Length: 174
Image 1 (spheres, one colour):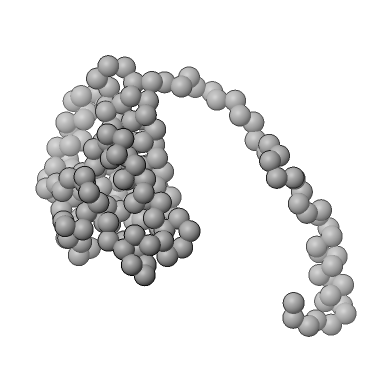
Image 2: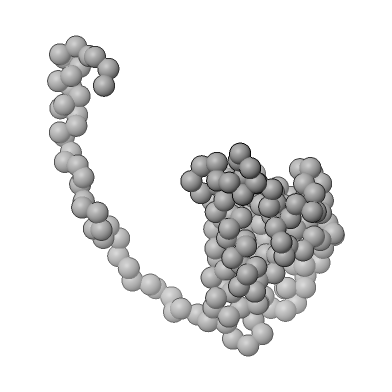
């Protein structure tokens, strides 16, 4: 700790002692656990479609959307995700530092890993070619199993899933 005069040191000690730390022991429940709605499972033929227009690491929107789509898949829904615009960046298997696949910071590969899990468990992932082109991404750099799609497919995919009666989760961030 830097050197401070006696008055500042006394104020530091006073500030630290004002509230006991830790205020709660590790493992203390801070929130209730009552789930309000039933744990719905898919009925035959039901679909869940997610649109992602979010920049990886700029917010949790894209990551949470993939987690929700994976949860729907595990509930028995036919589940698909369509990444478009800046969302296309999430589908690149060339992310990482200092080399591809490396986590430059904790959680750096969470989105990639979650997309791979989603595909591995039977989910379908589309990635807009125009979104890739806008950001200089190449098709050969897509995560294995991601399907490159024409830009006009974004709207028609929504129509396709709407006509199927799918639950549609559309995420967007600037």
